[in-house]
Image (cartoon, rainbow, N blue to C red; front, side):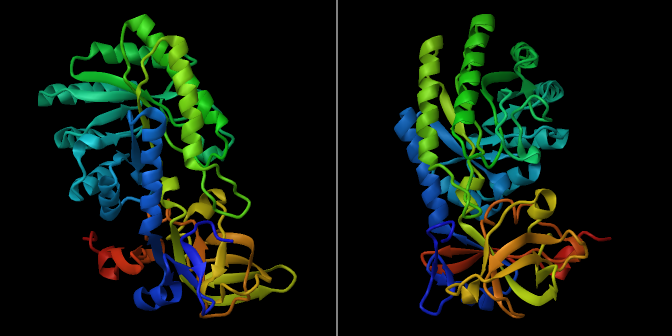
Length: 432
């Protein structure tokens, strides 16, 4: 019924997460509130770690793509599970450093890094930059020269793979703002340029073909393309690229119709392609990096809302209006993201009413989902939206000057706050 094993229905007919009654969470911490199950997050971390051990002989490292959910506690969890970290901004890097994350296991991505961010990351002595363009290559070399240091780098490449996902979250094809295209010769020239800089140490290449992908074939094809490129560069420039980052993008179950492949099966199939391609091209097996983000935290989270009103327009639709909305979850407004939801205090009842879930924000597009079947809604009910562990808190805003919700983590069956609720004072804190 639910998208994750961490959800259930108790004897009162209420939805539980991690064995804890969601109505009690709402009563104690208020709404809206993000809720995460720590056991599920850790289980997913271990699945990726074990996959590296099983299919690459331990010769690799999963990097938590922290843009999915960046906060200090998630950095601590990733570190304790032996993962590396993928950051895409100075703010995400600062969060990691404040949490005590090992700097040598941090990879800095992003297609438009500022000088200030690059300088900060170099000062932090992070493990690796994933360089996106020639301008960044030039600037990073200059900054390293000024600071008298040498920096490991990888190049982000576009393998030209269409991952059959939404246009806004497809990043591997040639028409993308990210990376160097292989098929145009741009990636070849980037390798040549990188090898000229004495302050940069080119250690590998990276690709990311998209997000919310349910097929394994695009990942296999991307791996084949990347291995061939690495072999070509070895033949042409006599450079051994020892690391291969195959990105993330593994799909999760947002709605019942989603049928994601088990993540270790992705790893198994892709590892077979990598090994075969290396053997054919005479390469040693590279150190394999992966970037799971959504698949680590997405299904482990829900958002709880209080229903403020139910508005039925005869012959048109029924609106269920909540105390949250696009400020805490903009994904439907941005690209019609799909979600499932139930009334948490009526979770055992049949879903009999088709509704559109709307929020409190002054925008007609402030919707969370349309044409969704839920239990009979009433003002005061508690609504639970599934699959909000990724890209909800991360993308939240203070639109209409509404404070962002807290994050409550269920640990060993008990709730604890890992990000407190914002206050009105927080909102005006930067005002002059």
